[in-house]
Image (cartoon, rainbow, N blue to C red; front, top):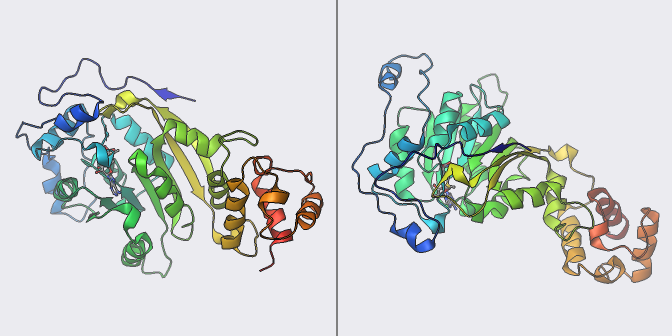
Length: 346
Ligand SMILES: C[S@@+](CC[C@H](N)C(=O)[O-])C[C@H]1O[C@@H](n2cnc3c(N)ncnc32)[C@H](O)[C@@H]1O
């Protein structure tokens, strides 16, 4: 695994904002400068032509902090506001999704817009969902002449299918073909599970979901092996709906303020519905998987007794090529699928 270490020059300092990790200090970080958001003069020229706009300069440490200062904002811990200071991490995120001219990209939590900037430079149309009204206003203002739509909403509560359907309908080419979309986001760590649960079953809308996650959570989602104590229903869920890949470790030193943990880029290639494992009912499948893990130490012939009798479960396990004494952490996704189709009558 590669690690992007110390890519923010350690000698750089910004006089108005101090970095710290304690909650009190996090909330005390006052932004006192009146510096304005940097705008590239070439943008104005580009607005007057139908040609593609010249690329803007990438954000760096100073521009990110300056953007925060321009709105008198200080990072809010409750919103997981750890801003990316290293443009090459944003480039990695965009490259992982292979974003091309004309792609439609959902970004969750654009913050100051440093990743949005790279997405726009790659030619994407961006739908950005930002919960913080001040940051939503900042990004809306910053990208006012670009193909960027900013919605001030809580991602965990918004109707993302409906937002995406509207944007896909308006952006689809006139030949009747619909275009597919991607997700690229540096999300707050505290909503990672919600985001994964909401987005992975949306293979009809998104082809790739590229997220910057907490490193440990990323490893648990992607690498959890059978019989490990980290193996959970979410692992079955992730592999049911996607092909996950741990891409690159990102050191905590790349964020402002610096979090207490490292991060990692994870790429989820979403499956289309036709490629999901064949189960008679997805709802009853996950209900069975959750019940199986509720009694993690229990054998399946006990924890699944509400579905059918112990002898029937033992017989199904043997038919599936598994020991009658199997426990949930010993079953792969394929094993769970076989077991479900043998014991659940829908
Ligand atoms: C980790 S910061 C990343 C900011 C920016 N993308 C960057 O790379 O610097 C997370 C961003 O998500 C926003 N956010 C937090 N909770 C959110 C939610 N539930 N829905 C949408 N945005 C949220 C925060 O306000 C913040 O701007």
